[in-house]
Length: 148
Image (cartoon, rainbow, N blue to C red; front, side, top):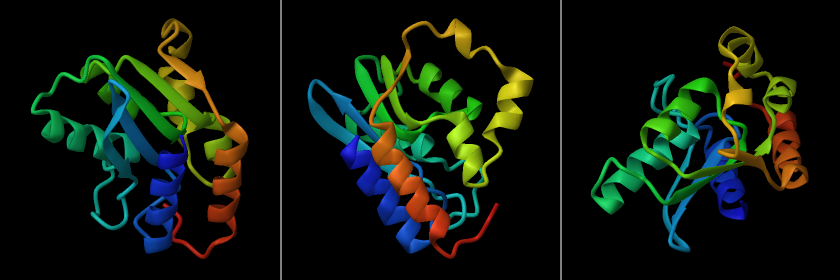
């Protein structure tokens, strides 16, 4: 998770987007890192998870990321969650919750109310290192940044 936090911090310091960093691991080896690039790429879909999934596919030479574990600083939005499922990510560890995302200005909870269904995911997702991720979110909240 610390790699995901460091990746997110790098992104927010450069003004790329929100404090969402991701690290993908396979067989104990980091295969990709990514962070939110919504602002820097003018791309509403370039969340940290999507960025890392794209990079992992290139590194591994496949669209099928079976056996990979994804670590991300914020609980994935529905778009990212579905991307993880399409990529066959085996396990997702997240730091902050959808509700925490809302505390720093993101509207993931709106989509969660519309689409729901997280109760059907079984053991796919698990929370990890929330306090460390909350500290990152607080750092972001106090920074001057564009709200989107």
